[in-house]
Length: 151
Image: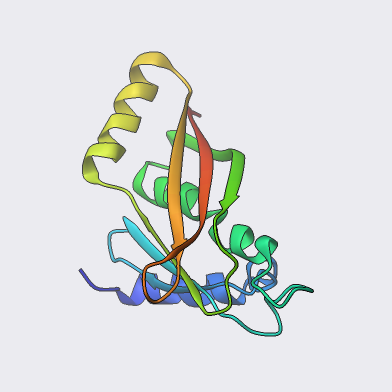
């Protein structure tokens, strides 16, 4: 599925938002149904650390809000509240090239979150994503815990 003009506009706004822009990361794609977001962390002077590798804060900052955004856009905002509550990052290999992350939510996961919140009240869901280079080598794994509740 491709981007729509609405998701292209959302991508542009995301990349111009000062806090996100400061991470050095760039949203490169938002699927029309908001079930996939792709992010790039370019290897540049803005994202390099003292050792000449990609700064861990840039990796984490570029990945931080994505699963929460996917849930916000796929759940009724007037019914459900979505918040990031925890995060961790496991660095596997220093990055010296552009890095990429792909965030996805399936229809089944969205339905499962709705069922869980409707039946049991607030839930926390953990989502992992690998940050890879162009060859698919994993440089970091980011885990975000997202809290979903009824408003």
